Length: 520
Image (tube, rainbow, N blue to C red; front, side):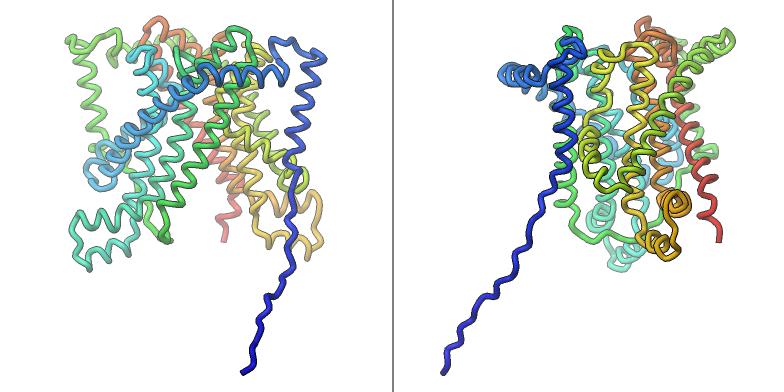
């Protein structure tokens, strides 16, 4: 019997190519930073040396950095938990009980149009500037995306799964456990991820405005003391927190959602018309009016609807609201145009020029995780509190959504478009105009809509922090300090209406610019 010797076949080793291009831009920026600080192109109080920032980081680590960071994360966790539980229950109620959805959903979606930033002056009057304000803002920020996604997920269970549940004679509990929850979990998790990112940004805003603890407070304290090295350290911590949160939620999603997702589901329809939709708002308005009139409610905190209407009429007739809205919209348009134009240009450039994209895109992706309003103390030190600083911040706010949506949509475009271009011999501007941009139009216009909203929200936030000048945000913040509730509520309504109109304008622009997609 012959002995057979098996020899392991040696497969050629694949060489691992290390891509060092993404490190080029950070190294150049670090070199530029070091040179600018050493040569004192800017005062040391505005641009400290990198070694000073590193020494400050080690000093803060030994002292109170982790305690301040932990304080912020603690309130983030508490508010996120409360908002998630409330949003899940409310969304499930809207999705499973049609009568409740018909009466309560229109009011909820109307209030959801008012951004969190516009609620902050009202919350500051009601809850003060303590820890209750943080929890209220985080809960509100979390409640809306979790409710909307839960309602959509529960209402969009595929009909085939519902029919299977009927055939198997599932009880309500069995259907909820084995059909509704597994089918709804992916969309619910999407709402949770969105809520987490928005809650972190909102917490930073509150700590920048009014707080005595937290990583945002530490940043403001460093700015007030002209210790920009502390500001740089806190910006790094905020960015690191955003990256860790995104990594954790992605890992949790992959671990929890491990079954095949249904490919077809019916879309939930929101009932916004009819008498049932008006019952709850009318009832609440009557309770609000008579409660204020008969002394059930404190008029200092809850002005009557009649007083709000009178304030709105007076603000319109004397031109106060008109001047404030004109100033805010002017800054939002100028800054938004600059940010959207830059985002579109560089998104296209970095997607089409592979090497350039490898150098710049990773660094921009890291900067994206830094909460937007964390840049404000740095910008106020470098640019100032005037309109120039506000416009720069608005441009920064609108740049990132436009850039990343454009970059992603062009990078992941249909490869058949490039094949068509090669076959037809199309190149240069004609290829860009006729194939690339139309092929990526959906993602580009999604970025445009987000950029418009971010430009408006960035303007409101900039007016809170840079109080000089006029604007609807400045008007609301000044009214908060005077406990002028009618003015605050009028500002909230105007802010929400403007945001809704900007989103509507973005949708109409998309439909008009891409009307060729609907042609047969």
